[in-house]
Image (spheres, one colour):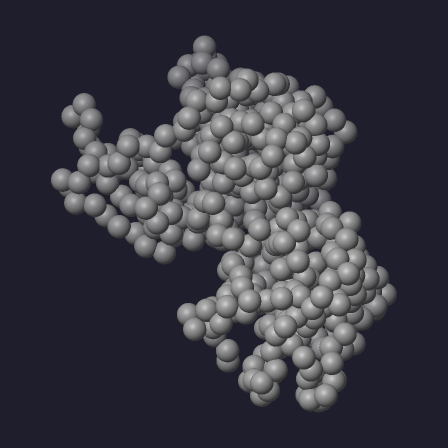
Length: 517
């Protein structure tokens, strides 16, 4: 087994640094890169599903199927049937397959969706492993043409087919690292170190304020403070939520009682006014609103590149870095919550988008208000009043407006606001929809019910929770987002400590999913 150790990283970096493309092949390389950049939108779709950088997907597509979108990314076999060559009988399911679903399966099969080392050394290791380490293990005199063909690092020697090496055979494909080197030279990608490194350790401090003692949690990227949260309610659940946001953190440090917490990370005041946001911005969008976004990000110190109104890779990376710093859902898209965090207002009109996406968007905005019920005159009463009549009719509450667990009322309010019809009480059931268990009964009646054993949460799902020792269905919320292969997902919820809140939850807490499509 070949492992990526320090010596191998240094070897890869040295090879990439000294890589020279053969002069007689540069035109061939440039023509292929023109095709790759033309198809970039397709690769970005797969990148979003797998987290594999689009340019790595493009390189594999070139090497495995010559950029042919009618063939499997696994090995170039036709999409009209399962693969025949190694790996055979992929993907699962019934053919014909789309290129996107085949590409996702190919990358998942190689565990690319859980791989996170996309540095130069990490990319070299992944690509060499994708093709196989046969050259390194059995023919070390030949640098793998899968990476280095058409460069000064490769002359001849190639596996004619699996297990059969021919020392005189010359690869006619452009090596993956040769393509990436040229793409970097031409300014299409940047393989340098990221401007904002991932969080790698968590610090916990003790703070006293007005005769009250509470913990302060901090997230650090080396010596750079990314986020600081004062846990004034001393809630272990809030601390757990904070920790789940940073799965890359490998170290947890508890400061001494005498050690003072650091000041929160400072954000400069945006001097450039933001227009009202009227659409969700994401990769590929263009316009004056994108220019305003880029100006704001640059002012805050998140380098989005040139202010050209083109939401490209650098702008997307800057948005993700900003979202990470602010503790938001890191998806690279700019919706109401991210725009508000930048200092702007939004007025996104209703569009004929899927209703579940409207639900996720609306619930995110609503939960971010942190509303608390303190009586019938509080704004949060708009949630609780929904079920008061039916609960009174059923004899579950009296006529005096009292507090009750309103997580399901929050979900119902959000659903109805975006046009999803939710009954006050499921037909044939003894309780109103204010009871979380009623949602399972109703969803199964309607064909909306999904077990967490067969599917993962999707944006716009309604999620039922099982918190230990509190019963099977004791809380409910709306899914804002989920990153493939993560152990956590993001939600919008009501009645979290009697407040509407944006939360990060563990997959292990899910009892069921209601998927209205």
